Length: 257
Image (cartoon, rainbow, N blue to C red):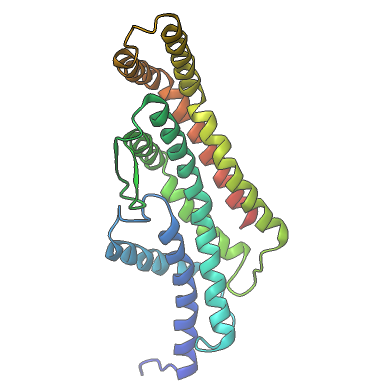
């Protein structure tokens, strides 16, 4: 005789799977590489469904709450915010290297050379795009996408569905993490920006000493050449600093979730 399922059992199963899907989908909405226009929306939906099907059978049982109720709606919001916060923390690590690349581009005089960022859909300098592409390759090389999915699966055990409410400490940690983006971006671009600033000061002194010289025709090529050389010299340090900042993002996610 085939097994039979009651309506209550079917609704409970659908509710448990949907809450898992909401948290995972929110992560893929905000997660680097998969967010924005870089990955099509149908691909992200399929990845969310596949990840949910793989994780859901090994997770703790969902609370006995009706899906289409006020309590079920609040659980949906809770799961969405948890997944969104995890992806947002990781996304800020990439925002730091984009901020550093923008500072380098403006110092080199390439602020006007911009293109559409496929992850955000806004115009950013090509130097920032170059750093961002390298950071994405490093992220995938270090299996960062697999690590964040592992942390997501562990978050269901640490904070099961319907049993997590963020405290003031967690919210304050996320706010402080947002402030570290500017500090990390400044550290990424500080050597190049400082060197180009010294060169521009030298051009300014030369202009005051010999006003008849056309410094502007020489200043931009020299800034471009020196900036490109410094980018090549500092690239290993930039990637190492980004790797450490990415590790700090993972540590924050582990501490909060």
